[in-house]
Image 1: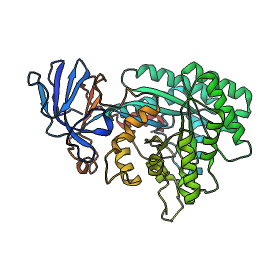
Image 2: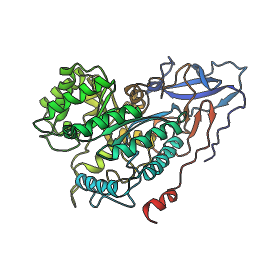
Image 3: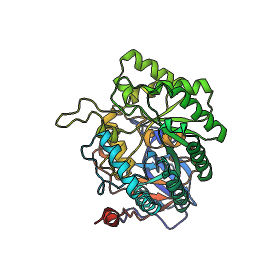
Image 4: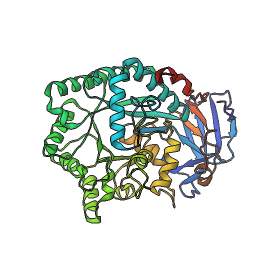
Length: 436
């Protein structure tokens, strides 16, 4: 996809008259309206050299007049499932329900998830993400035995192949009760250490939950990794493991970052319980990632019945309490979410609508840029900052109403100061995997 934006051949130039979301930069820019300010961005040798008020850049440098087009940093997509992506055509979810998704993925994994199959689908997903402007991704890896020995080496190879384009992180996904199998858990930890992954998991209500959390956090401390959990992905008010996780982090004095994803049932609690839990999450310094598109797809789904709730967590209440909260893609074209293309611009647009991040939109852009990058320990990413790589996205939209009303498919991706050719992969490439 060829860009209409032509940059000078010079190694130094100005993106003049850009509109920058202040939530994605530390620069002090005057005249901001609803979190947007006009700026000149000076690029030298592939890095951002200056961020100035519009019109203040040196006239000696070649300039690209943007006419108010928005300039964002590259995206961070902090909760994905690259190993599951694009299996819908060969193993769809029969009813769109959560149990249907579990069964369909289990059947597909047991029948098809060879190293070649996982690698082909991962690479397809990463090419899509790169074309949309993403530079940092965390993926969860299904890690029930023996899949951890298949998928993690694929991830390690993919991380090396994509180095310099997309930085990759991976968290092991398994039910925490599986740690009772000591041989399996020792081997999983060994694989995580060998491949540079981190501990994840799925929490479930039960009499051994506290012991499981203690064991997980102690193991994470021993091997020096963070933790990223799937939490309370249900409408059931009786399920609230989130509070148990926060207490475990405090109890164990865990010093790493614990990320909790989904947390849907929090929104089903009475006000007193919800406030008490939000306060606990803040005390424990948990980071929260909401997956609004997938949660709306799966939650409250009943055949022939219109859903009564949105399926997402108490995002705004968590942020108001000082909790770092971001949004992300989650699944793409698999039984847990039949749609999606790892495009954080789409995720952001839908999050604004679903979570009411608007009116005002002052700091909304942070949820797919600076906040998730910070949670993943990469404050150097997804930020327009002096000294940072000029990894930028230029949109034709000039104002929020324009940005949020169209899919922005005509965006321009700049990496290290140069425009890349956007090549979005053709789904036909996957036909052989689907039996076509």
